[in-house]
Image: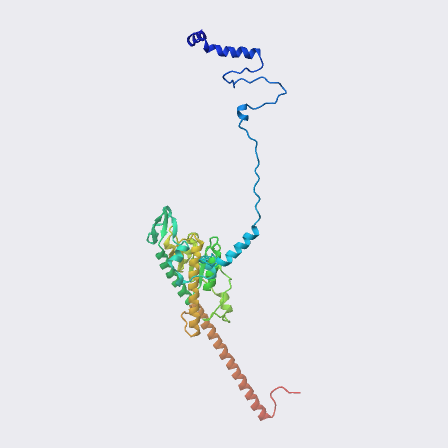
Length: 385
């Protein structure tokens, strides 16, 4: 009913052409040319015929032609010779680029207290602190500002405190004090050994044994001790005293990582041993006697600080040896050592007097025997063959 209405409304031509094409398809296997190309219905072909693409596509296909690359002569040798010739002519022209920083320079040529500059401290990243949320308000006087949430330590504060600590190390070494360099973090072993070698001091790069200072009579018992004079030469005759003496306690402790060595610093405070420590923005500055506000996470910064303090100890040691050659001694002998020397001196004098008296008695006995033999004409000594 609907189709009929559609045909009636649109006239005969609306259904004439489709009906004609349908009749032709059903009566013949060959396509009939029509004005409209029917691309939706497949055409019937023989089974042996090869499928052919439509003519609309084959008309624009061209056979692929492979182009040959032009043959170029090999000029590698000529180019290399020309480059060498050009380098020989203009190779020395222009600025000379030098390597300004080597990580091993701080160990091969350690800087001293006079070499401390703001540029050196900034290049070693000494001004980099911790995040602002981790800071200790007691370090506010050392902080210059905040950049991207990180506290920046004032370079002038670092330089001033580092020079003060170097002065302390130099004076302790000048007066013959025992200095201990401590660094227990990975990578700090070379730093503390280098500083101790320069300052003729001791070093520690392993875990601190609790009680080594407060209970040294038990923990450090039996360790060898050497007695030296003002020229740092061994003194003989104190073997018995050295074996019976109490273990030595350091006169100054330099700690590169106070956060991990709180027990050591606490023991030093109990026995009144001065300490020097690197204080970052998250550390407690009251743990040490002489603090150095700096970055304790940078090995390059700690290498600079350790080298400066080691050079300071070396200067103090040289001054002491030079003054000792002139007869000037700026340090006092410990009281226990002085008492032992006094006792040994008195014992030596008593032994000398005893030997002198015995020799006198022997001489007096010989004279008495000789006089009696002369009077009695008898020999008092042994008969000789």
